[in-house]
Length: 410
Image 1 (cartoon, rainbow, N blue to C red):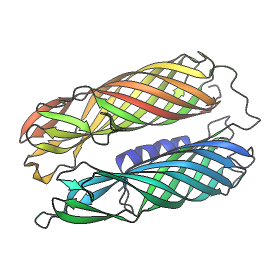
Image 2 (cartoon, rainbow, N blue to C red):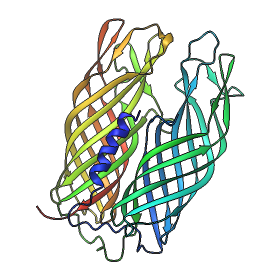
Image 3 (tube, rainbow, N blue to C red):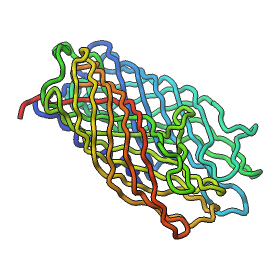
Image 4 (cartoon, helix red, strand yellow):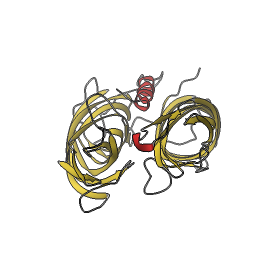
């Protein structure tokens, strides 16, 4: 079934896909000959694909009405099955794949450029790594990481809710062959040919000639939508008594675990705004003397007022924010062999303090860097009947792509 994160993002996209009053959504039908293109994609799990925790970034350009070229990066995971003959069927590890390469697109604008279906194909280099092991799992040669070539093809459709901004649905099919692995002397093989499905946000730059350039700070009341990707760092590694946290998916080998986020917001004037922000990150839990006992997923949902300082200098917008909300926790992927009776999953009240800096590369789009301290206390898990209360305070560092729309007074 579609995962919780994908359902949340779909709801946000459906909210933003309707142009606000005063916003002209003309798409790329009359576009300049050559324009830059930036895209962020998120997915998770669904009934027709084996891929999990799907995310992607693309940067490139579109030429005229029909052609495009992107340098694309896609990240996802496949599950490795336990092949030991004396063990029940279960996941024994995760196989993460980072695929990087060029992709050519053929586009066909419809409805005056507002709706744009497209097809694409490409290829490149994939970096593969085994992680989240519940047993000793290795690739041939006793290594945990290797690279290989891949091909990819697929298609999608995008809806331009503004002249240079679109939300979309996309499907990709990766062709990579298969990979052998070894689980404590027992051989196995995983099929790497897999499809992924994502929701995406794309922004084109520069804007059309009839759109006024950025000449002053953003001061009109406007709605916004943003997607973010980054990392979360637990500020106390011993999140429960006798239990420590480690990255579920480490960011570039660091102690940060991968974080995804989305938000919708509203700027009241040049100084004040508010966001409804949703994050997702996950830790692996390790018990003293036992090892891995499962994964702990967190979903903070926060209402965050922002104090903006636009135009210092022009096009740059620093801000500070605070917030309060709830955080949903899920305990999952518990190894059968741990020997522990584990229960967990609840909802607590959380808060956040943060700051960020955005750069307006168009009158309705910006790139940003933000840092937030999420105050998360009071989550509980039960270990063999004993209830433990945790401290899951985290520092979250993110890169984001934001689009703004509307601009009329109330």
